[in-house]
Amino acid sequence: MRISALLGCGVIVLAGCGSMPVSGDVKAVDASQPGDSQVQVYAVAPREGAPPSEIVDGFLESMTSDDPAFATTRKYLSADARGTWRPGGGTTVLAQAPNRSGPLLHDEANRAARDKETTYTLTGEKVAEIDAQSSYRPLAPTDYSQTLHLVREKVAEGKEEWRIDVVPDGLVLGQSDFRRLYRSVNKYFFATGLTNGRPTLVADPVYVRNRTDPVTRMDTATQTVRTLLAGPTNWLRPVVDSRFPEGTALRKGVIALPPDDQNVLKVPLNGKADKVGRSACRMMAAQVLYTLRDLTSARVERVELEGGKGSLCALDADDASGFSADNGSDGADSQYFINDKGQVERILGATDGTEPVSGPLGTGTVPMGSVGVARDEERAAAVSAQGQSLYVSSLEADGELAAPLVTSTAKKAADRLSPPSWDGRGDLWVADRNPAGPRLLRLAGGTGEPQEVRVPGLDGARIEALRMSADGVRIALLLTKDGRTTLNIGRVERRGSSVVPKISVEDLRQAAPQLTDVTAISWSGRSRLVVVGKEEGGVQQVRYVQADGSTSGSGALPGVNQVQSVAAADDELLPLMAETEGDGIVKLSPGDNWQTVLKQGTSLVYPG
Picture 1 (tube, rainbow, N blue to C red):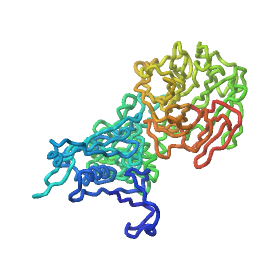
Picture 2 (picture 1 turned 135 degrees about the horizontal axis):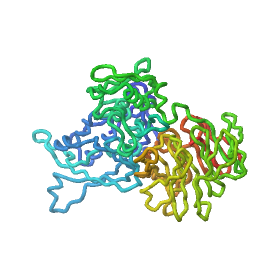
Picture 3 (picture 1 turned 135 degrees about the vertical axis):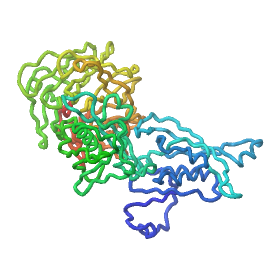
Picture 4 (picture 1 turned 180 degrees about the horizontal axis):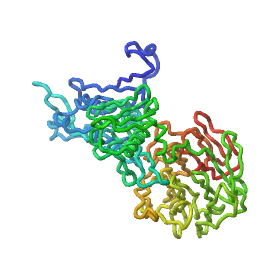
């Protein structure tokens, strides 16, 4: 049923890719093989006289193809089902391709009916769902079961064939087919309110089809812009806005958006965008630029928006950098750690040398156990070695260490303050793990009285560690409950006065549910995290996880032993750092292997 066209062949299949094998073992091939975006699968129509089992298998196989409009796939359905089945109604992702069992047995009284109708059951282990907004939701592995009902239908005078007349909407795919057919992209919206007095873009990850979408016939870039114009996903919607007016869409008939030979991309919109002002239009163009920046093979250098009445505005990539959460910089490249005296030091770039930071954290007498450096690298927050007190100090001026801003009264060090984290708004976050009164705290601007942040979805779990995203609207939490620590992503909502807003972390969702014991996390870029954890009965692994909880086949990183913490930068090209029990502080540069940087040192962090 599956014909795979590999790019490596480079010629017509009949010419072959080498000689035909004439010896060796015969091996069964599962319908869902490890994903390869270079593999093309073609749908095949049902053959004449095909039995029910072949109809079911052919239908499942056809769903894994790029069948235009699913026209061939629909040939496995009855006339009524062809008109009502909605393949775009969401995607169910199983650990493996669905298993088919059946037909269901009937007693002798129903023997006649069995010759006219039958039922098969699809089963598997469901691990994720993609909704109609293209939003990914990971699931703890659960049993999946759906039925397909088949009938004999008249297809020509005097001729009947088996066809499926009851079928659930959407697609059912194994993980490997899903990874082959879909890719994760970030669409961008503006954080509600201002970050440091300026609009800031927030990544909203979704999945679109590789190559061409069978339903819309749009290429990947056009699909992505279409999802951008449709607005943010439901999970992120309460904390972001789009500058595109409601109802804005691509001009009718647009199915491809290729940049020209100058890397200029023209986006034709309908008339809904005609009345926007110049400032809002430039922000719309920035949303498109950031959404497509990592998608096309050639970097888009300029976006030109066109409305129903002609040109609206244009924006160069360099001018869009001011809307980034890191203010257009390439990300701070300094790494900080605590030496064996409890003092904060800085690693000096490519030389891997070190120096004490300026101020009392670099020369003081109070030993520190963890540190968090503000993203502008002008200040740092540090928690004392026993986890009792949180201090904030300048990294630019000498002076005495100020009084602690937060103090935990827990009896055990492990129950006191977590390592601190700064968001892109300049706010400082820390968790007090005191069993008698656990709290998530925010210090506006890193100063003053701490504000307690509500986290209504904890359900008895305790916050062990936290990391704030650069955009300030998402928080990654390590939550411990019933002896297990899991990674959860929460949405940071701000209501009321902009001076003293009421802040809460809403709609917690578990990321990487396959990891049952997570020990360390760090944001790596705009919508990705580095996670250290173990699967049930497995060994420790370091891998990348998207903010929506999805993982790619290439998410696993080279092995490194006994990782205690990780540190990644907003700039994904900077080295990934890790603190290990046996090798000290190590780094992983792109395309390289782990290398030891320092034999001694703890609490390694990038700014943030």
